[in-house]
Image (cartoon, rainbow, N blue to C red; front, side, top):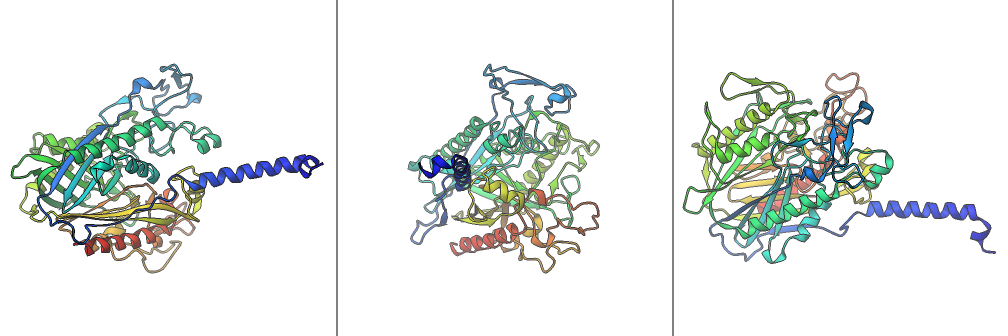
Length: 529
């Protein structure tokens, strides 16, 4: 008689242990494990810069709600709770509860309808033998492996050297991370049984299609860039000390070569996309919808501005810290109305106010017409140390699948389009890491001199410098290490609990690595000039 026959219980336990180990190993492996990017273009001997070529495209990523179930909200709080009397109807007849779960704030927020379409918008650039594309997506955030899959699906005959993707961190769109999809226990979390894989595939295909259309539509273009520094009042609040903001509205306009006909306007600024708040049940791109419409169609009187036409693209900036308009009173341009509480009127006022700033900046005396629109790119796969609950979640493959011995694979990029320089960050950067003002407060968990210095924006060499967040990934808040604060006594006079932030971060060692790797990628970009 064999050992296993004599010891059936031990054998069964051993098999169970092996299955668990195998399952965890599979979860920790993650997709495309060998994927790496390390890119520095143009190479020596590349063609001399000529006329810049620019192309744009947009693809609708709004879910078709007729393909999903409907629900009733008994107490009109925007959350699905059967204990409150909420019910659902199997509208699509498949016997499953298929609702569009909205991301941000909390789970159990199903969509009831659509206020305005959601988009994946792409802009492509070509010059001196280099072709790159950038995509901005109306989404809460998308993880790195999903973008790798999009890159690998793009038509190779287009000879695109690199594609960067960024999300708006929009809290009024479908869950694309699997965090808010009505989790019903550990089993649902492990297997993501409620995650809408079909919608995620729709978004990925939209990104691919937008990039390919933008590149196929490349045409000779002229370029103008500008930036405007705003005051935070009426635009944004910082809900965590120290008070440091992303106050530079950076923008670029591309026109058909030799004409004033706009191909695209591109703008970057840091502010959470959450004006409608947690009770909203309509899908919307929030204030960026009105910002983009203002750039394209103009903003009416009183005190409006004429639009540029073409297509507008908004890229999210630095939103850690926390940059938000939730507590901001936004003034209407008429000088009389003010919007304090969550509403579409507030979202429209904020978007149009930012649009007016950008429209005037690009038409103003400080606007810069680019004479040498050379295209350069540097990109690098990096590994960020992840700890705490984030680390456990990644190790189990619950979020951001792929565990690299205590680190998560992610990416930093740097671009140069003429005198416009762009640095991309794979999460929600605290502005003080880019703008300066990092503190080492009494009560912080890691006292000492700030580590993330010098400030990133001061190391950039463009006449206008964009820092784009949630780019190619979403690894959460990127918090200066000396400001990390989860242990009492708490910093900044907090007594009962620390300030909000750390629970949505990968740990205190993420920021030093992102800062170091960002400096390195900028140095590589500057060596290409």
